[in-house]
Amino acid sequence: MEPNQSVDYTDMLSICPQALETYQQRGVNDVLAAYDIGNVLITNHFYGEAAFFYKLAYNMHSKSPSEHPLSHVLWMIRMVALLKGGFPLKDEDLEQLKGLSIPFYNYVTGWKHYKDNHDALSAVLMMGNCYEEFPTGEGADRTYLSIMMDLFNFRPQLSVQGRTYANSMIQVIPNNLFMYWDEDVSEDRSNFEYHQQLGYFNCKIFSKTEAVDWLYQNYGIEARQLFLSLNSPVEAEDFLRVHVINQYGGWWLGTGLRIKSVEQFCTVLPTMYEHVFFLADIDVVHNDFFGSVANSPILNECIRSLYHNCYVNPSLFPTYKTGPGIFNRAVNRNLYRCLKGQGQRPSLIMLNHQELWWQVIETSHSTQ
Image 1 (cartoon, rainbow, N blue to C red):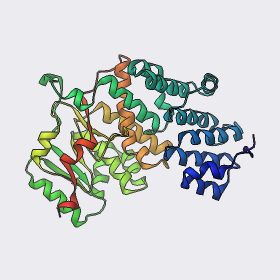
Image 2 (tube, rainbow, N blue to C red):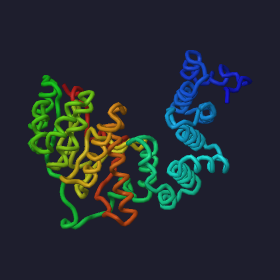
Image 3 (spheres, rainbow, N blue to C red):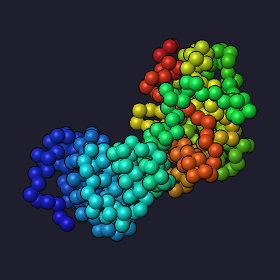
Image 4 (tube, helix red, strand yellow):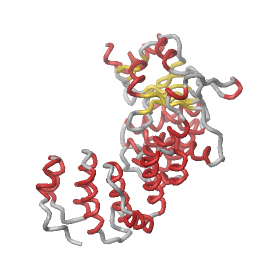
């Protein structure tokens, strides 16, 4: 179908200068142009308008499996835009989505059920493991995790107070602290020395050369080759951190971050969990600073997704390919298995980033 010539796109897009600029540069005569305008609109929270352009893109789509984005993806994200905007979803539109992709249908209807009824268990059962149809860390992983947080009560205000575990039930995260530098610069060295002088942690900082050798010695030639093939120092640190913490257990601290004090560390961070993560308000698991025991079921899943992305999606944005996205997916997989009776409930807590992060962490340059 051709774009609706009776619509004044300039007037419609006047609410969003970025989307208007995209339209003025590219028009709206092909699938990708309409899709990109929809993406700009949804990013800026103009959900109804985004849904309009996603539908426009879908209508122009050839429905060929070789044309990207795929047609069922366009129809699904139209439904997501309507959901985010609080608009009703028509039964016939949902049935069309079901005919295109059952996992996408499960995702949308499960999320809709949760928004309408606040019934986390029923929503998750409807959704199943639909997140597997998406790249790691995209909206499906974040939405799924937010519902799982309600179901399993991992949020700190619900799960820290009054909850204890017998020592035989959990391992303790060891006081190992690991860091990485791509280049030996004075600021990084000073930050590492600061943490050594705290006298509380067993500290180790990896140079790139050391990381290459360590990966080869502990995980073999495949890990070394993948590490060396990564696109940036950010991806390299992401790759190393999950391997190191899964091997030894302990805490990972990202380059440029600093623990304020041992007192703050011990006061804010609970010790009765095998995994301690910070969760941003957009339901993204932080990987710049976290703690875990060795041979973690969550980090094992992180590594599995990491290798998959390196082989199958090497150009994926780092946040999804190697960063927080693989953590979101790993937590979801573990919780889903638990819900299905196929694994134990993982010992973990999600701390509120907005409330607690800066009580423990600061940027290293802020104190120099």
